[in-house]
Image 1 (cartoon, protein in one colour):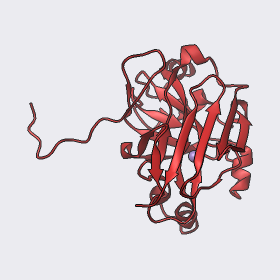
Image 2 (spheres, helix red, strand yellow):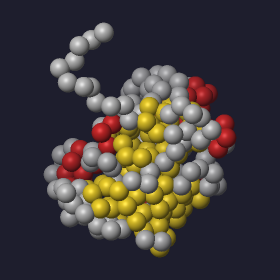
Image 3 (cartoon, protein in one colour):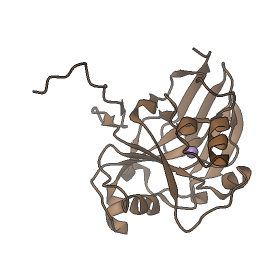
Image 4 (tube, rainbow, N blue to C red):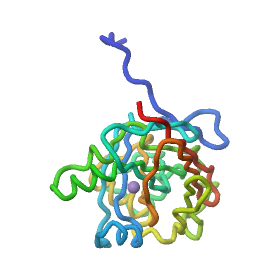
Length: 232
Ligand code: MN
């Protein structure tokens, strides 16, 4: 057995509906601008040719229902409600069938974002990491197996801030479908069980302050919740 200088980081995991065992999270990929109305509100054109990606470290994983202290380094912390795809089989340069088979489960997720730092990075043509790879910013609800959920399509995706609906769309509004995203991402990475993909957010993103309560849902999936706490 390897002797470590200090304990290795704990494995982050999320529950799966109907399973005693939890889903251990490996990598976190996120799709940018995958709903036309959100791309427009960000002042950007949609690239319908191919999706683009950014990543978060596993340290960003936060289970649904927790309180996230308002993070350091931002004055414009935003919510983004998203459909999460959880990979359950290795896939590399996958065919459409292989990509579909590789999708083990779906879930609700929040891609919490330091919008001021993301936009500054965009303007200065710098990486998005400080804006997007925020500790606790990948909020993940319990997963539902794909076989139980079915195919993403007419399901409603929505988010409420303190009970008021802020984001309201349908999964059929996704520009690049979940299978298309898995196929495309698998041309760059050896996707493997534990990899999750946040597939992009609909229009209506906005800022939070300490004390705010976010709730969200997608028809057929376990709902998500997050409370914003005082800054540390
Ligand atoms: Mn996002």
